[in-house]
Amino acid sequence: MWVRSATHRLDDHEEGWATAAFTSDLGLVLAAMDADERRTSRAVTTDHSVWFHRSPHFDQWHLLEVAREVRAGQRATVTARIVGADGSLVASAAQGVTILAPRRSAAETHPT
Image 1 (cartoon, rainbow, N blue to C red):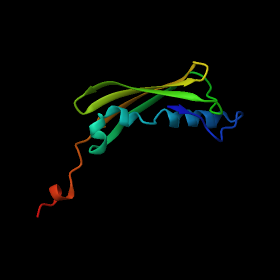
Image 2 (spheres, one colour):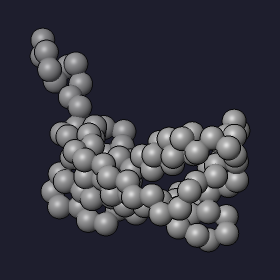
Image 3 (cartoon, rainbow, N blue to C red):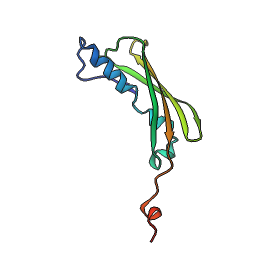
């Protein structure tokens, strides 16, 4: 997914770091789940780490690459890379995810 801030000021480095941290968490939980689970299951983040490699400038476009590295039972590890338009690695992230059991319908919870 390509991302860019509509309000980023080039001289505001803290905003760039905050935008990179927020971007590093976009869609990682969904990437941990299989497509059919996304409608019926819930997932929670168990940990999230971000490594910053370069000063981010979100007045320019960045590519967010997300990959599910491993899924074992209800646990998954997902990674992300934020790459600048020039191909430089700006930040990378790793996230642990636990997929919870599918939601039960009201009829299943309270049978009549």
